[in-house]
Image (cartoon, rainbow, N blue to C red; front, side, top):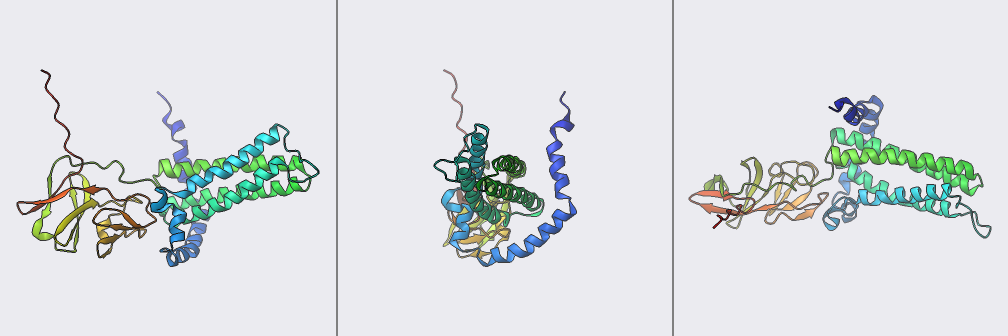
Length: 307
């Protein structure tokens, strides 16, 4: 039987990182500086676009992060192959060009990373800050490497470039932990399907026109809304970070997530404003015998009897 301690080292390592006092203090300072600025421009379409939001369907930051890693990996390969030699007396060789392109891409990646970090919480925020610090260190090393190359100190530039990529890969590992280990920026309702039959949710008289109600049916949290006499049902768990939407403010036929202020249309679950990337799943709803009933997936087909 495999040693469970050996397979869980990464969990213990990340947990220990989040307890570092200096990281907690820095996290509090960064939060105090960034959150008011983010709140001020939250509704700006440019800020939402930096998340990826409804237009892209997922976070923009992970996609952009492939660029500096790719550029700097190519830089290292050229260095190892001895192809970092400038042509025609120019100081800008192929390795330097890729290094500079990676630095430019890292700036855009950092901007989108800060936007996503602003809508994280608690331990995720501290881990995200450490992830950003590592990426920042990798970018600084790459910048010094580029300066060394341009000044003719190619051996120093190669060494610093390799160190930069090593730090950046470590940062990528932490980023992978956030997504796959902590489920940050993933669709929290992607696997919600039930119930597979009509289930009573709430008495018809208990849901006034324009009101919302949060109910649980067979383990699934559902938000009910009545508009002009018609009942609508969507997933109550926010697809972005798992908050219960019925606790948020209702504005007309929209609800504002109480955690990160994404806005969803209560009639069809579509995203009106991010940072959410995925719409809320819609459930069929009906009024029957004085009750509002909901259903998730269509009933499973009956198996055919063999003739």
